[in-house]
Image (cartoon, rainbow, N blue to C red; front, side, top):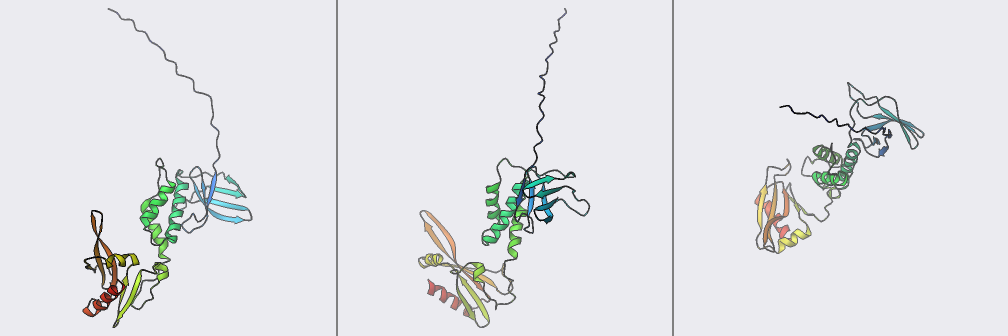
Length: 266
């Protein structure tokens, strides 16, 4: 028995003869966009440039990819508000997330300097939420951003004290109401910290719990002595820290004036 074989030819549809236009990139100048807080130029197609020279309204930008073994030759000329990419091409792939990375990095640095007590992790999270979309790829490295936040703060921090006889910089700490007493006993020093709200909670607490921490202390102080109390809200009961005392010595004659001051303020 023979079977007939029919072959149907399916013709592929013709592709439209359309050539997409070559859209030139746009450029954004970011103030304080570099590690040293200088100007940075970012193109919409994912390349970054730093300023090489400027004269009048003319600025010459060069690609940031520079190393000992290989420098990217790509440059951009700017005259007024007009940008022109010069003939030599980039020798590396573009980073489509370049502009957002620069904006996140800039915001992290600025926030770290403006709010010195805000945790670096929160600063990074807030900046990422503000600039990064769920569909974005090539995201900034969050660990590097946290290190950046802590590094820029180092320049503002007072020098580490080398003895007990240092001046407490309350302006830097922004804690006018937090330091309640600076106690001297012989040649020793004890700093008592608490807020008005914490002292109010301590006043009405039925029991106080005291604790000492020693491992984390610097050379001048021997312990962080703390007072806790249980706070009840609704059906929830939680123990919270209410007083902190940096102590350089832990003898009975040190605890007496510290305890007296705490009771006095409560």
